[in-house]
Image 1 (cartoon, helix red, strand yellow):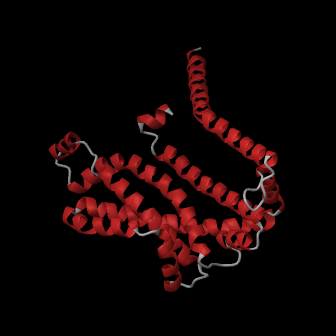
Image 2 (image 1 turned 60 degrees about the vertical axis):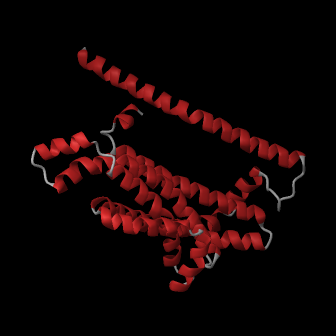
Image 3 (image 1 turned 180 degrees about the vertical axis):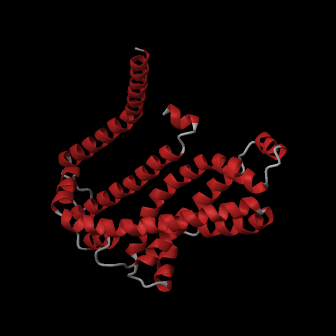
Length: 273
């Protein structure tokens, strides 16, 4: 009887969590539906030309009918974004670790990182195209990596430095080494900050890959496809390409969120969500 009660209690708690999450997403979903409905209604009522703003229904229709060319292009660009995301985030974690461990090095490097990130990404794209093969994926990965690097570096560093002094003193009282303190105190403290940065970087990576492709890329790349379609006044198809890019960016963001939930099961926020 007690086992049934416990099982029922767990099922009830799970149901409450599901309803809570649905409640959190409902306002955003309502706003999205209202915006799309208003967009569709105004473009029809005002007879807005397609080159100004296509109807959402026309974009979705083209998204489906042109799927055989749009989705392979989207997958190609997604791989570039994923590579840049991995490179930029990995280097950001390494840089934050070095800066957090060696303060003198950090004082010398952080102004350089910030200055490099302050340069508009559109200025890096043609430079990376000259460094690498302009139509290769490497130049697009480099652009995406630059966009991802600083958010991950800054947030990870902030997390590493957010460990409570009493926790560190307690570990030292147990004769723990600096490496043990780093691994058992600073790293767990930094993980929520890191995943916040990774969620931002996942969106920036797709933007970086698309922007890089505007300055040259493979013919089957999504950014090249969007740029070409806009140049020949195929605006509905260009908007359908933008929809593909948005969906793939959301997919990468969702993968980071799912990973965060798995890794941070110990976190009170994760258990309560």
